[in-house]
Structure formats: structure tokens, C-alpha cells
Length: 68
Image 1 (cartoon, rainbow, N blue to C red):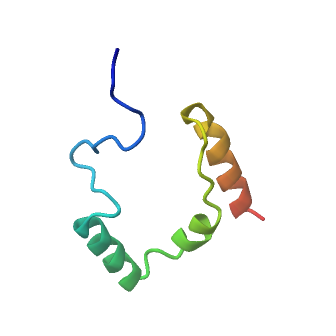
Image 2: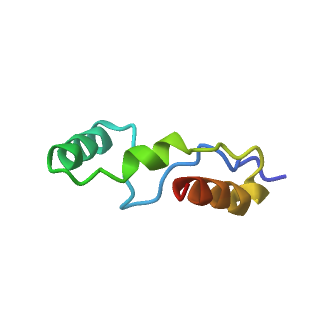
Image 3: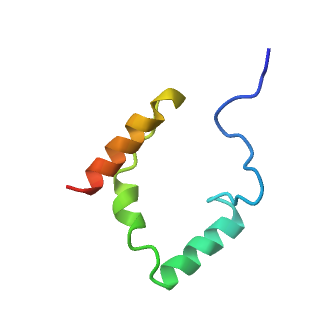
């Protein structure tokens, strides 16, 4: 049996974790440069999926909520 889980897998290179020191630095720089204006409305609509198979439904809900 494969014991690898779907959640919390290590990110493959060259991905950078959002919560890592480097990810936080990139985020802070983007805010300072004004490049994150679309992030905050999107973050307000974030919906955690309860099941990996529902990723499409979660994305759709988030996307439609942005257009209200």
C-alpha cells in the first residue's frame, strides 16, 4: 500500500512555499510594488475543499464569488 498522502506533499522545484521565508519575502515585495491588488478579493472568497475530487467545484465557487 502506498502511504504517501495527497495533502502536504513537498513542493517540486522550482516551487516556493507561500509560508516559507522566501515565499513571504516575495509576497511582501509584490505588495510593496502594488502587484497584489487582485489577491485580497480572491483570498476573501477562498473555500477549502473537503475532498481532492472537488477541486473543480471549489475553484468554480471561488471564481464566481469574485464576480459579484
